[in-house]
Length: 520
Image 1 (cartoon, rainbow, N blue to C red):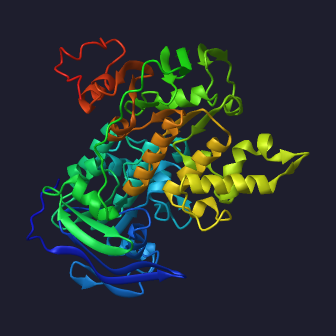
Image 2: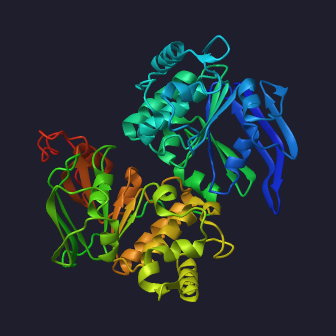
Image 3: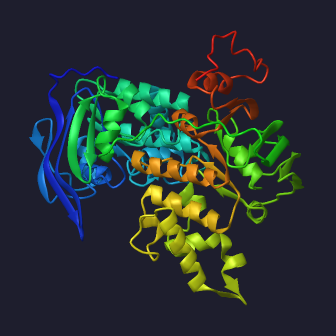
């Protein structure tokens, strides 16, 4: 935390703000106070009004009523460029980058140095970007093409672009969703360097442990209204979550271990890929949630992709219900009853411009809903309606396009697609990324219900509390290898992190020597 005092003057003030859209009141009597020199966390469920408030501050929308003050002076941002000129920069959760341009061209887009009136001064552009990146401590090549960067590095480009405007107020919307622990630490150090007596940060996140580490205070909003502001040092996670959702949520439940006599549904033995995976071996039992933990680059996602044929396997065997199977592509996996829910549900899991019915029926369209070359729409609609009810998908109708659903409901639609395909094995990669805490609980409840019905689930997650909360066993990976498989009663954050940071030449059984607890 930055250690701001309670006597610090307000830097940014929002009072009595209302904003309505046709048929929807997004904000009512909204309040917010960001003090100079602090990091203010802003939390609330999806649909609480966080994005609308940030769009007002950044000039994308204008308020119906209310007052905004920056440094004690009233203002109204009329456009994103105007907001930047006032000293307000925002980093959106959805990247606003041009993939075919370089890092430097994205950072200074629209402000590129020129020779004369027409020619771009590429050398100066790269030099200016290099100085900015070095000052921020970001290990990026200004000449690298953004579309070829990892998601984490694209996030760093967004941060560099925002800070290049030298803002007084920096708004960060879920800035760590694609970052591993080391990158989160780098980002937090960057925030601490940015926060000075005349600057401040609004930090939007669903990750309570991050808020505890980086924020000074936390403002909670719910259903478009201000609820409360708490000092992070004295507030408990349970208090914050209760304010967000308006009800108490048990975040401490731990699963019971799956009985050893449960049948092995899926067996992986000696899986190798040319790019990363080395001798990956594990099994998945009936009704089990098997968590995969590890740092970014450990190979967790690669295991899921190799399993469903999205990445090529060089060697190793896959058995399903005791019989060897050959999976050459995701269609093969689906035919064998294995469904894969990608970490990027919008890109790989959904047809965003199609409606809920079409998305749910998609996986089983050829097998179940097509006869003589024609789609049996009545059957598809009945199946979709059934899963909307069973999974508690919040949508006004089956005709609602997927892009207009909340993140949690989009995730449920993807799950429904694979359940309609009657998959026995489900691979969830980051199942709650970008989903608010209330929707997370619904996804957790759904996963537990599926496991209780006998579905076998692989859950890949970068959030250790989520892994510990949900997993019957935990597979820990490091540098493409499985370093340990932990039962629920021996898994804890220290033990997982120990095995997640092991190098290939280190002894995986030296936890006791290092003083790592192996009990929960």
